[in-house]
Image (cartoon, rainbow, N blue to C red; front, side, top):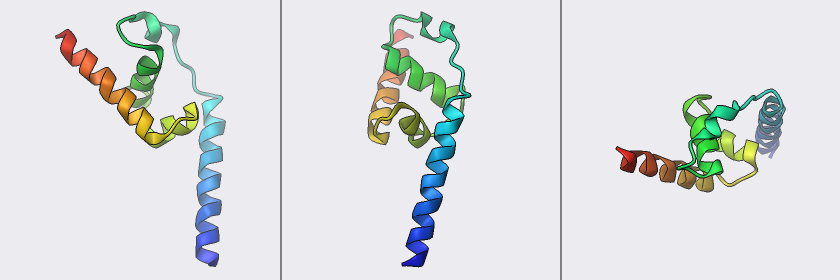
Length: 84
């Protein structure tokens, strides 16, 4: 039981660290210039590719489910692929 409690404490601590880093995360406005993608798609794409964040980290920052972030990112990739 103690191991599980320690694991949960560490997980909460990690989530809090991620949220604190969110305050220092700056998103440049030029990222949203491309109007072919929705705002959430552009944001997730930027955080994933340029900031090298995982789906889970992005989900925590945006208060979304990991699967939603994955879906949004995949949709953005498909739209970019169809542009070519």
